[in-house]
Image (cartoon, rainbow over all chains, first blue to last red; front, top):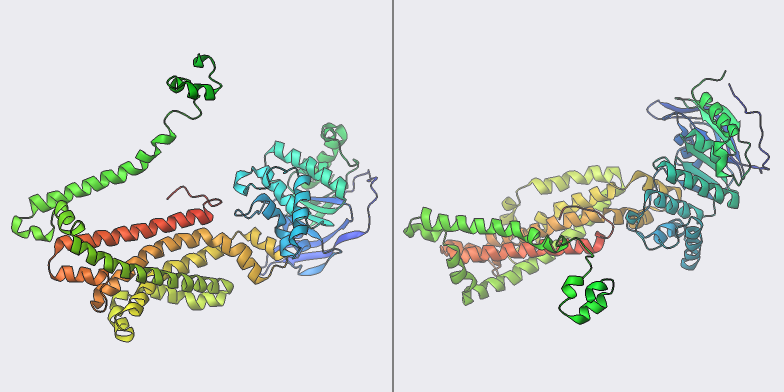
Length: 257
Length: 293
């Protein structure tokens, strides 16, 4: 049942950083969220997972992060520097942008001077310079997400896990953040597992798109994305792009003719 | 002349009189300035109604020989608030009552927060201890007052204990509620960094619980004043606080003095309530949104 797109990526990717082997998860109440999932993410590879809501794609991410443990199979992450970006920005409302961005470094016991420097660099990277002293409530949804990204960046992650981070944002903000994320990715070359329910977003920002079926979640198709990075935002309007989005959407509907 | 250059307010102000004409309208006319009458107007109106009703009861409903039951407001002012010896007695007892209330509140805060934090640490601790917080809330403290006097004497300690028992519950329940209402993903954010229990408590749960704790604090503060008066009122022994003073006035049918003591006690409660409102604003007003209060 696995449909592989004809084109292969011209990107040189490294060794495996995240590996799922026959992973399944059954909750104590008996519902099976995932079954028989095989998936690898190589260093420097950007993998998106699309699937119907409730198919267990977030569960996949939670297993990768260690928030959940697989009830069957093996998950290996070959790094401890993992960045996790939640669905909402999860900023602490009583802390300023800088203090929020410093939080993870602070929890890891980094010295004050070091985390100040890290935070400053990360804030600049996500384009929030000038908003350091603002409280989250004074920021727009997109800016909060940027702060959340900056917070993860302070740990220099080799692997990024994204749980539908831009799902709650409007279209324009979302596209802008997609570009920012692509820029960060081109720059830092981290491995990424990105959960989304938007097929075009998945195709635009990934090097590989994986399609999951409904409950229990299984991987039904995988597509390599042939476009090079850095990506021209206009590729979204090319026939090739539309064709790939179409193919992924077909797989998503269970229509693999 | 200054009308021709409205963009330079410095000109306008130095020329004097025309300044009023030129001043650029930086805000909608009147809107912000009229907030105060809007805030103060209604309660003052209600106060006027209450005083009017009071006069009606006192002067019209009650026969002159029974007027001592509810003396008219002006008599409360002349015989009580403006009566030197009475006010001296009342302020001396208010000092003692305030001391009991503040100490009792401080003890209630410490015990309440510790109790709430303890329960938040494990489900079994919560299950074991929460019922007793509810019991404390439900037993009629008045029934225990004689017992407390019997055990601890009738002075400061006993009054403080009554005060703590009355003021404790809102601190316990609000602290627990606040600590438990932390957003799930924020908790997971800390879990992912392997943050210790202590770190999670101090850097996440406790700050997140502050708005709830302050809401509890405000209720407890009001109750602490009630508690300080109640114990004293029933003991009728030891150094007189506001409660025993009220009890004395009551037994001597000194209604005007009794009303004065009640008004002073109420004002003290309001001041304490307001004070904690201000404290709350300073502590969490910057990031925590409330439309009310």
